[in-house]
Length: 109
Image (cartoon, rainbow, N blue to C red):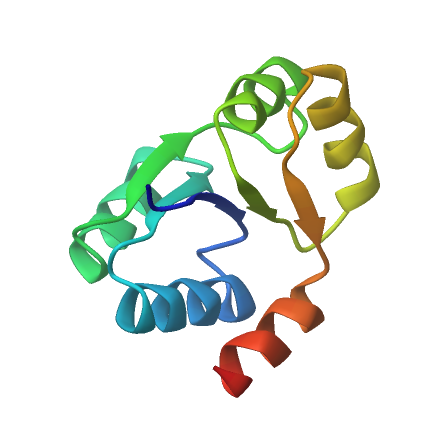
């Protein structure tokens, strides 16, 4: 089964780059992104039709716990410690990575 990857910051340069690389190199991955509003969701869906968007705020603890509980990997650019704490609370075994590690791995694969 393909991993479900939850990505924040996708509307920015680095987050968008990560989604672009992953969707191109690994179309089998289920990419789920957190966006702030419907306009961002439309832009993401137009750019990467296979990517699922979740509308919300990165400070919404309940949303982070809900999504983290369903996720295999989390790619979070900022405040990742509080996000990982929410995932641990949810009993998720999700892995939290700093963006720089993901970019390095994406470029090497």
